[in-house]
Amino acid sequence: MQLIDPSHPLYKPLWVRILIVAVCFGWAAVETFGSQPFWAMLSGALGVYSAWMLLLNFKPQPPAATNDAPARDDVAEDDGPAEDKK
Image (cartoon, rainbow, N blue to C red; front, side):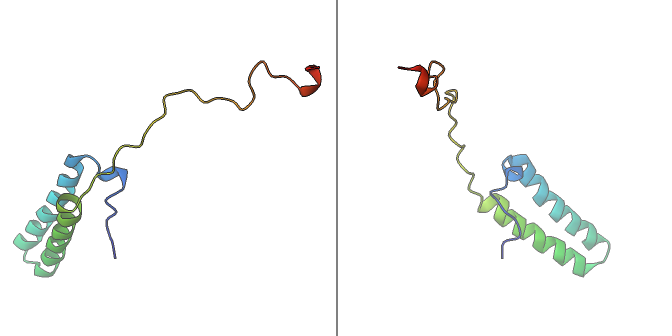
């Protein structure tokens, strides 16, 4: 089961991925200092999972090939109805 989709465009910048991991571990520290071991373990586990998915196992998608040529219509401008070309 995959909780984090690393191919989502939100996770492309490195600072976003680092921020998510830091918030998870930071919240685990808050819960530890607040004497809440269950929530500290839960937040820490989420931090480990997000670090694994977003930092260690992250494979960025190559940029999509863009076509800079303008789109062509199927019918050229000088083509008229077939009846006119006799």
